[in-house]
Length: 126
Image (tube, rainbow, N blue to C red; front, side, top):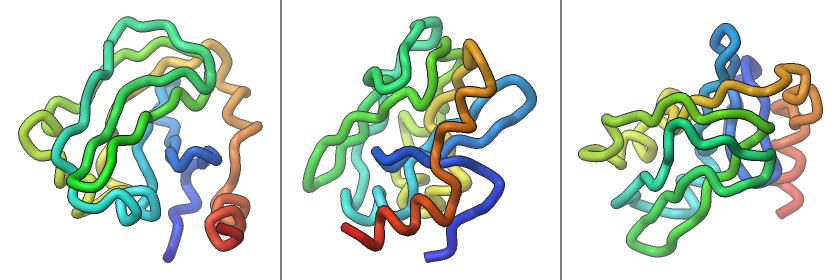
């Protein structure tokens, strides 16, 4: 698996990519592979203020449901509405499909997240 180096990762399998003062958040290719074919992505509430580690939404597949977590403290500012009708976009291109955008309280909080090598080592360790 080749991980993009232009973003950070969480131990709970989210990726985080800065876009100005906003962070795009999605799930990794490894996560979508483990879940299988996604049938629902949602329960994301724009306007919600979350702390790092709080549940920000959910992804459901034919096999399981999994929470998606806020990578940093901040406010959710958008949900990717395309996922309402096409949750499989994540299966097709996990690193190109963001689930929600969050405006962090402190952008420096992303420095505590994993880089690509750190996340890959975690995945390899099981």
